[in-house]
Image 1: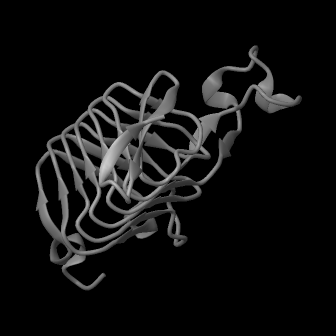
Image 2: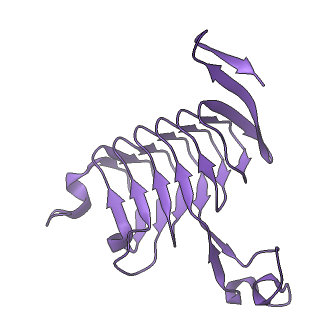
Length: 177
């Protein structure tokens, strides 16, 4: 980024806007945010959040990227979405990171990359959890929790989200799975 910082790359940032760790952000042109968006990145020089061209996010979107969150081109995000590559401990395996007697804020942070493809549309109130890949051309239904990979050109919805439709390029239609 040049001396102008974020301003040369964005189309519109509505205030208030909260950005922690701006040196860990890679941002392409055409970025737009709604009101009260929050981006939490570690302090340092490594890029942990990559936002490609023409990404538009709605109000109250919160993104946490301690290791790696990548958002493809031409994505549209509704409001009140949470995307994180990080957990305060995990429930798999054994050891300190699984111990429920340790306060959550004292547990080690565990991170798994999140990748969101190109031309993805994410509905209102969606939660995207660590370690998830959402393929190109997906639609994620409102109020869904994404805790597993979603294949390209599908519609997923629910808690946890499941694929409910897939685009058929031969017929140019969404087909129920």
